Length: 168
Image (cartoon, rainbow, N blue to C red; front, top):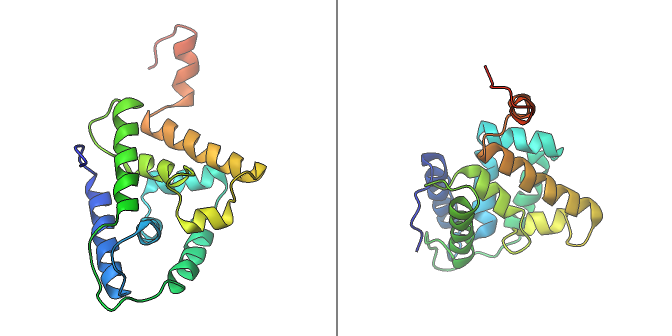
């Protein structure tokens, strides 16, 4: 069970994911639906991460629509969150606590976990196949940029801190 709170933005994305699961007659909100809703409602910081890594979220969203259109409808639609999303959120919680020492789960950590081979949605696996050098660079780019945003790293002040000067 998750202990750390999500941001209101991510809570909203989860609610949209549950609604989409119901609209598409799915048997629960899975990682592909969650990723689609996440991409559809990117915040400013996550949008800037995509730009820095040179990945257009619109391309991912287009591929996501294709993946979702191929999923079969179920007789009984459910709004419940499936295990793959719960595992992703648990991993994001662990990273937030252990790596960043923060008391909530920010969207940037969730974005980072989407680009972890263990928790990648089909879109990411299709567009960035495991073992490809260019895919590895993109995965590393997302992890690095997300980490820098979460740590609130400012390269303009970090060099002065290294030299012993105090930032203004």
